[in-house]
Image (cartoon, rainbow, N blue to C red; front, side, top):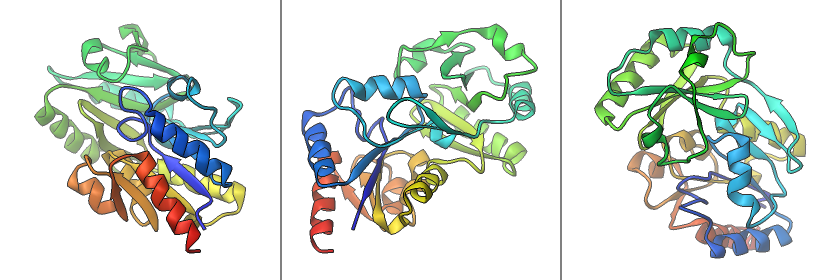
Length: 260
């Protein structure tokens, strides 16, 4: 039986807002005893704000691609940020004329520049070039990101950082215009495994939903994983099922549970 659902936000549950049909489906399946969790690359305050007007989450918020986990009462229960020394090295090696570096730092998005690009995702950010000169970040950087409208340049930077830091970091395109660099022992998948241990459930008792390359880790190898139909082929191939929206995925989960 599927007891927990872990769902990505942007492009999956959240598409310029939440669909009433999806929210209704979430509430209905939670009434059946299934716990719904969010797994996102966003910082906590953004994730919380995106859904709190529509429904109260009963599960956990996996934020910054697994670097931080919060419970439904906003308590931080887990953190595994990038080491300050590594953050400094990533910043020092950044060199691009068409891209901008940013940090997810202490719950905020700090941009060096590129605000107009970032507004594709959110207008909740701070532009502060001085912070990138720091030697210490108090070990509060969940991940380092790069913004660009030039996809060829993002691909170049992806290969560059994989080559330079691939032994200690995961480097991947997380959506249009963004590249993310995170600790390689941190991911949405690892965060899900951490929560499963707390509940004493197996991965066969969870369902996952996503649409982007940073969701592949929580789709691939999970028996009940759902990719959105609009996802790239790489993402869809990593999932067990493809669906049009969260409601459709939940309806399939209900059918699966009825046969168990």
